[in-house]
Length: 153
Image (tube, rainbow, N blue to C red):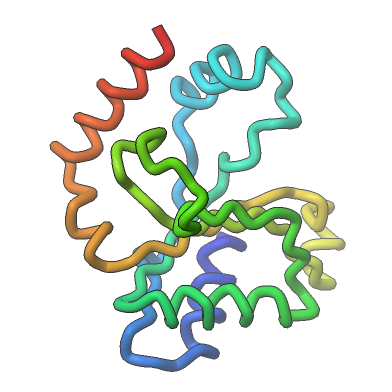
């Protein structure tokens, strides 16, 4: 549960009413979706698949997104590897059917993660505006999957 631990720690540290973890446990990408993504997107390069362990923090406002990101960047036990800012005005949201968020790929570097040999394991945190999360219903996600599958066909 390392990603969930980071989400709860980050949201507690930011300590504003508009930032909260979406779940109390990390979500694992399914085997089927991992294999599909490896074949369609990464041409079988397993090292490219960085979102097997992932979690989400939902915020009310863009300022909350910035606070969460800064908290992670400043945390000495978190090594931020990549920030994919899908909130940027330069991001073409047609690629994701209008959906936007900030994706952070990171490693957790603590005595325990080093002892367990997990300090190089990459996790993903999604920072999402509440209004986008409200639209991310089962039907909304189902429509996105259909869109993605047609685009990749």
